[in-house]
Image (cartoon, rainbow, N blue to C red; front, side, top):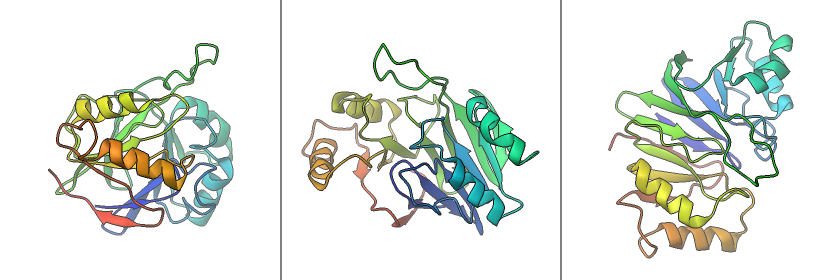
Length: 221
């Protein structure tokens, strides 16, 4: 399985000629989901869910399908009947040949005055490549082995101590930054130092940032 970093919180996973895209939102490339066979959306916030990007992908590939939670499915299912599937915490399914589990229920707290929306993370598994986990906008611990963690490194709802402790608790082999679209070049350097060998420590997990457009082959730890 190969991972390609898209803008902000969006990634693409490639395996045996098929592509699964997670969270092609408004901060990712306009064509981030075009070419996907399956699309997963973690929640309704516009940096993760952009209807125009989903429509472009489903129109480009008449066989492409979407798996997401109810709040997103209700906004796009009428336009693509039978191609949008509603999932929630604990569900397991196969999407374009990828084995997927859904974990989590709620978005992290931004502020007590802001209502929390639903949020589901996705654990995607492929033999020989292990399990990739994208938590969306929450620090959900999936309760299973994770080889590759897609780490929401910077957000209005988090602080770096929580990010470090989250990596320690999940204990992946490697963590790749996502949700980094609001960081400047200086910000990437600061977070890289804090999550690297000169920081407080991430329980042995390797921390790496991929530039948008870069790809890496994944393996089991």
